[in-house]
Length: 115
Length: 117
Image (cartoon, rainbow over all chains, first blue to last red):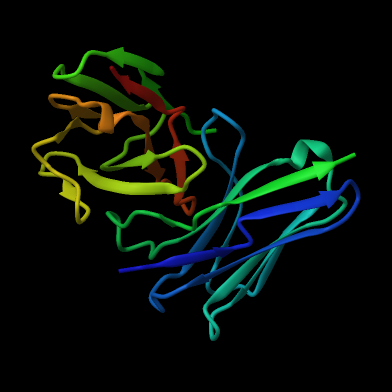
């Protein structure tokens, strides 16, 4: 089955700096890679996702890159703000035909942005 | 956007009792829902895949007789923790996939914090 590794486990940055979180996956059949943000005591919220036919996707201050050959993908947050502080999870899954295939998550990265 | 509702949000129970958690997709049909367990400051660990009208698929190490899953309709899946013990105390969270159109986005419920005394 799929195995997702995520690094670093904790990341502290100053407001305005960039933050990068990296993930690797094991199953070459995986083709969908979402990133979730989870604030303390709340549900994970999808912030951005990327599919295997795309190498990069950007949404305002957030971008994700994918290298299928190396089986790794990264989350980039620019101009970080204190409200970006949360736990970020990467995940991987096969889709769309595998309807019953769940997301497999990395262990999470606790991002702290200090002002 | 799509919403997944999960109840209750918090349960405190005595050891030996059973607890039922409901997960509903509010504005889309979900033939498949997923149940995860999350320990403090840890990741979401997949417990089982709930399939409408058929048996759930459990991950290795998850006791199916301990964690009963029922997916009786296209919008409701339930997880019952039977004969709960303190080691079952955890944060349980469900999710459902909105497969309409090209979305394929997985939405999460708000989670249920179970505390077994």
